[in-house]
Length: 266
Image (cartoon, rainbow, N blue to C red; front, side, top):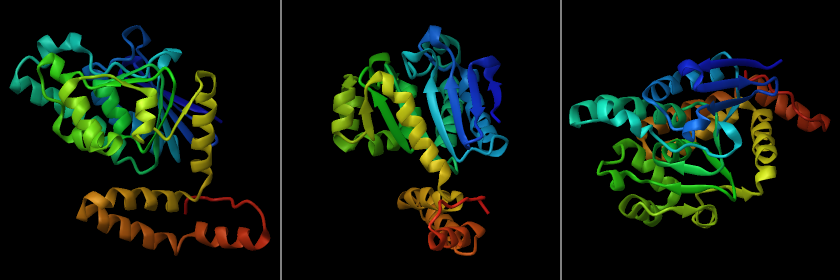
């Protein structure tokens, strides 16, 4: 049975399916799903709700309306909320918490990208584990066009997603990157026809959700550990837990019995 919730006065919608696939929808299609300050600050709670209450084993982030992923931060708020260094620091604390919630989410996060994926929207996609797009997708980091700096802790996500040279080009030039160019630099896992994106994303999410949850979480921690000693210690402890888990016993038993395993996450 599906369960639903909403955050930021309905600007973020969440849904957790019986398949253990969670969906997080940026719901401001009239603004090309640009995130206002309320949305940035609500995003960690939305992620947490999907994992804890929705018991999601994989999460898909997408934009409402079927046209755009996200135009990034709502520039209309900048005159008040991001007008100088002091207010920018307070505003960007919300950005950082949102990016971190995606980056450190214990379950894999998939970005399903259509149309515009600019600025902070690109930051959200870059913080995700996997990115799939249709051929309408367009990427850009327009910070230098506005005369501001991109959030410091989001830049490593861009470098991981785009590679060093393409990330530098995107940050320095503000030049748009096409879906084909994003695929060529391995920013995208795959590029599909617009009619196929939802099917492909949900199929991938279902495959992940059907795998042994402790194993998947340990694998995500191991990938994250490449950049941090503390992450490495966490990954080692999570990997050790899998060998004493009921799921490991079930996986061995299912293999012997030549049937699909039924994982409990324990």
